[in-house]
Image (cartoon, rainbow, N blue to C red; front, side, top):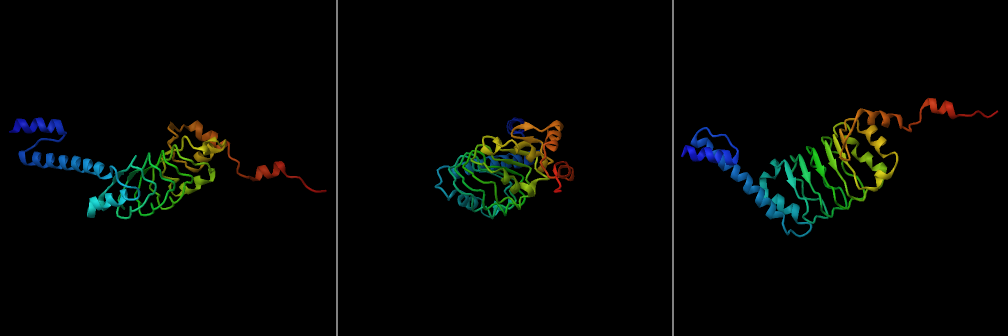
Amino acid sequence: ASAAFEVLSAAFDFEYDTHETACDALEERLRRERDEVHGERLMSGAPDGETFRRATRFFGADAGVLTRLDLHGVGLSRIENLEACGNLKTLVLAFNEITKLENLESLTKLEHLDVSHNALRRIENLAGLSRLNAILLSDNKLFRLEDLNAMRAAASSLRELDLRANAMRENRAYAGLVLRRMTALQVLDGVKVTESDRRRAAASTTTLTAAMIKAHATLDE
């Protein structure tokens, strides 16, 4: 029996100590894998607007202990019914049809938000998400550079930002503005941020200064 448990421990990546602890470890591993499979089946084929409700009903009282929720590619057009998931740290909503960032205010512990490959036109409603360290918004319809202000709550914690394949990146001020406002950023649009990038951003500022006023002012005679 011990030989069999040793084989199982190697296959399922848990440490074999005694029969009892091995059984517990194996049961826990199988439970996690079962929940993951059930979760995938739960989302498959759900009608629009029902997916989040199914998820929270499936987990029931345990929804409050969820730390990761992956709903990529399930045909969502809205973000809703996440009030019971207050401990989420990772939320993946990529490859859907979402048009608006909304109903995220209860996710105050969220660290990773992926809403890439959707139909967003604005970056908004992120004011309460001060723990975010990664925001992935590539392949949307974002074009307003001023929408970067919506991420100011996470400006000191944000480590990764991806806005590739959005019209706002065509603005010449884009990279400099992002790096000046998000000083902890380490990866921008899939590329590591270097110290020379930060220096260029600082040098490209268009903030009105006393020196600029003095240099360009004229006096009426």
